[in-house]
Amino acid sequence: MEEINITVGRVKYSGIFSFDDYYKLLYDLFRSLGYDIEEVKYSHKTFSTGDSATIEWNCYKKVDDYSQFKIWAKTEVTDLEKVQVQTKEQTIARNKGACYLEMKGNIITDYENRWEINPFMKFLKGFYDVYFYKSTFDTWKAKVALDLHTVENEVKAFFNMQRFM
Image 1 (cartoon, rainbow, N blue to C red):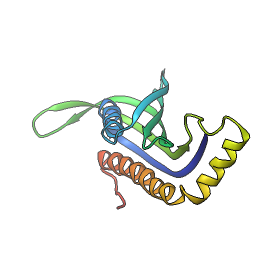
Image 2 (image 1 turned 180 degrees about the horizontal axis):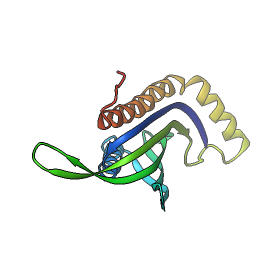
Image 3 (image 1 turned 135 degrees about the vertical axis):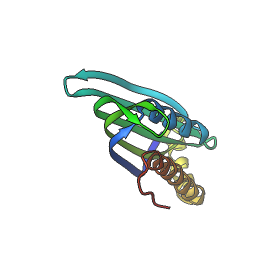
């Protein structure tokens, strides 16, 4: 099994937002892109300055029998406090704080370790990767980068930040 790092994405925001809506958005985004989500860490702490939360996910998407995508996503929220926001019609409860999202897009080849059984199969795997799988791998690199940028742009849209196309 070999994990190749492809791309990195980051979003940093400070202001008023709904933490519950943010969590649901991130979860729904990965699920709509076809990823299975494994929550590695979730911690929530309360301080005098506000709450703090850390969420860490490993998101996997099987693309063929030889490779799968993995997006590691970590959210850190600090100084989270409840505030009331006045709209035209009503007052609604929101959160105020700083949110930092970091993601890493990877491709995992031979994720079931079928080619690692003996030295000859390992040699064939290297030969296959270099001569036959290169064009497919380049296609998968572009696809995992697109998935990561899609998530990054949607999170920026949620925070009403400028996005890139």
